[in-house]
Amino acid sequence: MEPPSAAIVPFTAECDLRSAAVAIASYACNGDDGRVLGDPVFEEVTEGRNHWPRYSSCGDLPHYVLMHLGFRDERILNRSDDGGIRNWSIAQNLSRLVFKTGKSFVWASIAKRPQPGDVLYLASPEHVCVLDSIDEATGTIATFDYGQFDQKSGKPCGRRRSSAFRVQGKQLLVGKRILRGWLDIARVPGLLASS
Image (tube, rainbow, N blue to C red; front, side):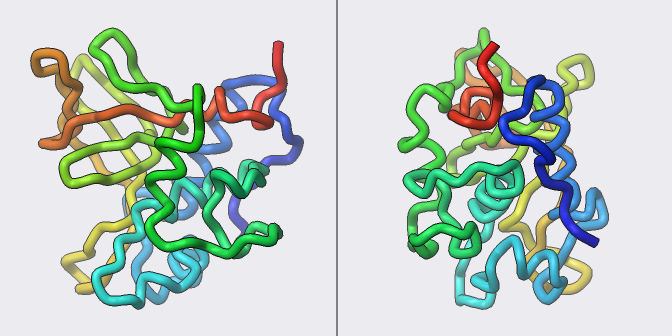
C-alpha cells in the first residue's frame, strides 16, 4: 500500500492540503495501532535511522509528511529520499522546521491555535508531531507522533496519541509540555496556491 500523496501541487484549497497532511501522517502511524521498528513503513519514514542508539525519530515524521505533500525545498526538507542532492543531516530535523521556515512558523500565544496537519513544536524536552485535532471543550488534543516507545513490543514506534490540552497562564500545554509554536502548513511556500 502506498502512502497518500499530493495529486496536484500546489493545492487549490487549504482544507484539501490539511486533509492530505493528516492522511499521510495517519498512514505513517497506522492510526491508533501504530507502527514499530521493523515495519516497512516505519523504516521508510525513519529511513532506517531508528536502529542507531538513542536516536529519536520524532522529526522524521513531519519531513516525511512534507515530502509526500510535494514539498522539495532542501533548505528545509531533511530527507535522503526526496529526489534532491542533499542527504539527511544530523541534528537538523527540528531546527529546520522551526528556524528555517520563516513566516510559515507561528510562535504560540493563547489567542492562536494550530490546525490539523500543522507540525507542533513542544518543549521540554523538545518534540515535534503532526496535529490531528484539538477539542477544547473536552480538553484533548490528538497528534501523530514518532519518537515513541511501544510497551507491548519493546520497540521504538510511531502512533496517534491523545493528550490533555489546556491553557495555563500565557502558555498552551499539550500534556505536560509547552506548545512553543507550530509550522503552519498552509503558509509553507509552494504547497497552497495563492488566492
